[in-house]
Image (cartoon, rainbow, N blue to C red; front, side, top):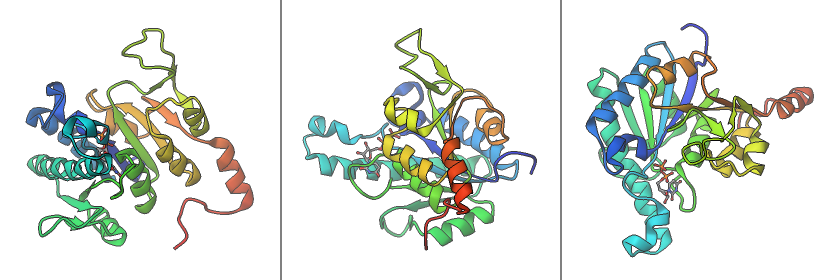
Length: 256
Ligand code: UDP
């Protein structure tokens, strides 16, 4: 492996799998994303993926589907399992070995998440797709991505989005939006930038895991970001890093 990150957690939203359809799964788009990830994996990196479910259902859609919010969240978590199975096939079609591990028991065809097992698969070169979010309502798959990044001891969490990185406001609606090449987690939370949810940002900041926000839709972006090229926004709390180092503690790992 050349320079860059050895083990990474990628967050792919459900919406990304829908392509221009906006809903459901677009096989061509899904195949393209799988090929992008495969190309990064072939550089020798260990890759976990947290996949969202927004292309099928989001908790906030509870009213429109006529169920209580907590039930809608459960439906959203199940939606991520559907996406994970579809994306596992897409990865296999491009020659990768991929596993799906879910935050809650599903049944015979999906393994339940287990940290040690996930690390074993990663070490063997399998791509591990983490489905089911955190397994709890009231969270998003961004929080799941932060959590899994900690649990697999990833060096970086890469949030793959629709735009170049983090802006001070939505660049699709405001042409004068200002782009950040670097920003601290605190600023992301305080300015309510919303591109990564605050709970996820907080977990990553506390565990000193770097977050990168990149545009998923440009060819080779995932590969380039993981090779260490600065193509989007880097979110890093340099001050906290200094403090942790001064304390002489390695705060990256959860106490076992
Ligand atoms: N969800 C949840 N707990 C989690 C992760 C997800 O309840 O830990 C539900 C929530 O309703 C959410 C939906 O699953 O809206 C789909 O996830 P998300 O919105 O994060 O998907 P994405 O926007 O990434 O496609």
